[in-house]
Amino acid sequence: MEIFKIKIPGPYSTVQDGGRYGYQRFGIPPTGALDHFAYSMANLLIGNPEGAAVVESTVVGPEIEILDEVDLAVTGADAAITLNNKSVSGWSSIRAKAGDILKLGPVKKGCRNYLAVSGGIDVPLVMGSRSCYVGAKIGGYKGRILAKGDVLSRGAGTLLERSRRMPEKYIPRYETEMVLRAVPGPQDDFFDTGLEDFFASEFLVSTNANRMGYRLEGPRILYKDGAAKSIISEPSLSGGVQIPPDGQAIILLVEQTVGGYTKIATVISSDITRVAQALPGHKIRFEKTKLEKAYTIYQERQKHLLNIKQMLEGGL
Image (cartoon, rainbow, N blue to C red):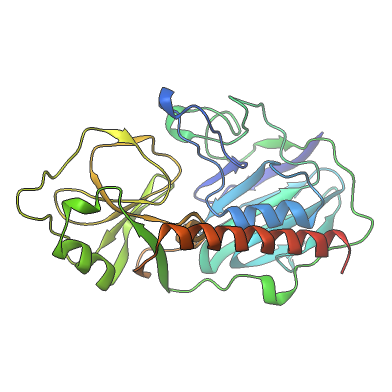
């Protein structure tokens, strides 16, 4: 069912879902929504199944014409959202009718927004996912960013019997300064004072920041004497922090499969959502965290998500 037409696409809007896993050995990265919390909540707010595809936008969202009655939800960055030029709230379900115009303005805080529609965005499955990987021109809508005139369809889904809204206390506050928890390694043994400097220093997000990774600007992280400045290329994971020969850290994200630079630390999975909402110029520090603590944080986060799900589905 055709559900909306793109009038203005925004600078980088793509269709994303929970990710494409199991194909990294073939050079296909996971892709998927960068901010998994905002992505999951957008679907939950309109009763979509877990994993439904959404539109992820960066810095400025799209302007779209609604083609049929539908429930919508917009989560993520703090941005002006209007329906027929009237302000509507993010982090809540929105009932829209054919002919309505939804507009997502420039972000005020944060970086990325997530637009979900009843039934999820319906584009072909590629290797088990609807996520767009622009680098290989696969998935999403014709393997590319959205453009003016594109018409997107939705899957089967019913409208809500009553609206849903995220309680204010659960809506993230995107900061311009953040502390990311990170586990040292896997190549932390390539550093001595450099490892200490890494966890003691402040970094700025550079303009070279995208879905592949965020390059940081800050003090040069030095290798210990005699240590190699590269390794045999190995599989990479989202959150790995590479230190290339120039000593400037790079946080890897969802569109990378292998790398030959040493990784001084790995940002815990629960904090990747915060990286996803960082903009150039934002400040980042790293906090040394043990692996056991990272597991505990992950388990607590899963319980938190389950509590929110039960609350919203119960209409509380």
